[in-house]
Image 1: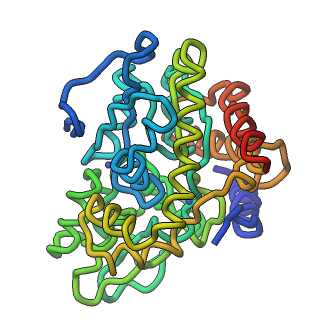
Image 2: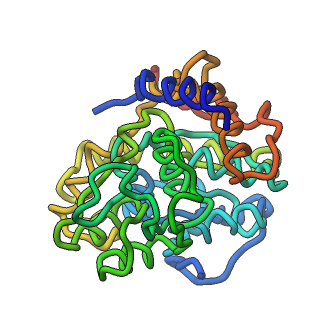
Length: 347
């Protein structure tokens, strides 16, 4: 990447203000472990994937408290231990929808998937981290070191952002592609010098004595946004079910706000951490309100606008070799479902 262009692009991230209120083998289903084809006939369950990220774990509350049923939608909610597995399942048509980041969605579209973003869950504002061992105090100190991340996913993306900010590339480190959970465990066991992981796997990585975050998603505002992503077929053939998913999400946020202690127990259990550990993730994940969603979908000239951010991230992914080509993003976002909820809620 041209250095002048890099500096300008990084500057965009640094000066942009995150839109906020306060941004992973087989899936585990709460009912079964099978899969259903995308866009099943009307009346069939929507197969929805999610994985270990604080901005997506609220879906467990949605299910446990019957909020899907309250919105007249049948959902087969599937938990993925491996985030990348959930991305691949949606791209392959094994899910109707999934919880995933903007940049991972763009990568899938670049590879031929036809996907639509209908909702923004959050912005990562610190819960994606590059964690280093004792003695590493700068990005330049990573030169020649063993650094792991799950290849092609969001924390690999964050790692490359940091390296390029320091005038380095992946060739300057000994990169080790590992699934996020395995990477966190390997780092905690002293087998790596640094690791790129997201919460709650950050908790495992930081068990290593002397370890610390070197840089995080908070250093790149707007770079990592998290979404409800569905297939184009789902939007075209089952829009009422898509609307029900969106409605269920916002109803879940309201329920969490009104029942903090009860929902903390549900979410920390699903994340596999203690309640106190889960509380520590709060500032690193900025959950989007309905107002934040409406604003984020609008066209704009900085990273607070998702259409703008998508173009910038698309260019970066291609130049960094994380996507084969820049895809057509003109139909990536569909804001009608968020708008419909806002209207019904009087927002």
